Length: 331
Image: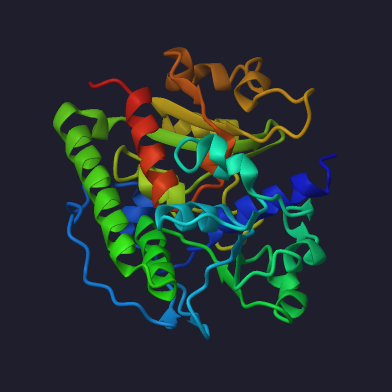
């Protein structure tokens, strides 16, 4: 039985996989169609503002540009670093210390006491934040207490465009509009180049899947999730959400994975103790798993769970794109 922190991580992943689940999802998202429009490289102008509306339609108003930001979500760590700042506290040191963000310098940032989704509020307050940024669906319960001393902004992008939207909103709030536009254009160029490359060399015709969880409960980052939506721009990605229930929308059986015939499998294993084995190793003895084309071709890749599972901003997404292309050879 997973511990409380493990349950919180699984709950967060379920929310992420289903955040955009709805009957109005476009046909291309449902089918995994990868022949999508080109990526616009130029960012729209941006001005500083103390009132912004985020991609989920929530309005955030501050009295002054925040300088001391506490990050309870990987999106926050990612975007704060992208804007040239450093969080004053984090719940996700494994994200912050990734080379795509601060690397070893991230070890200097205080780690919030408690477990993910159940952070110690006194530990947050002690850092005297101007703004606290958390994960929607996970940190909602902290709002009544945290908002006694700082605004709490709950965030969760479902697409790379929404990640960019949060970047722009935070850039406006912090008075770093120029940095936000520069970072947005850097990411847009990275993604546009990757899309062009996969279409040119045939990798866009490869079927891919990103999965996580355990042998008893396999989860897939569906096309209604941030990483699934990102990967469908690079490869065929026929893994739609299974309805609108966050607890089941991302569940796929091994038999269902085989039916989709993925040529490449990306895995981020959720390991909560030294005794835990990577998910691909847990599945190694399953006869159905062994028939999946990616398994037969030794094209199953265990990826960094912090980067692939929790980093939701432009720095993390750019690194995911780069690593995905590095793992899949040209056709």
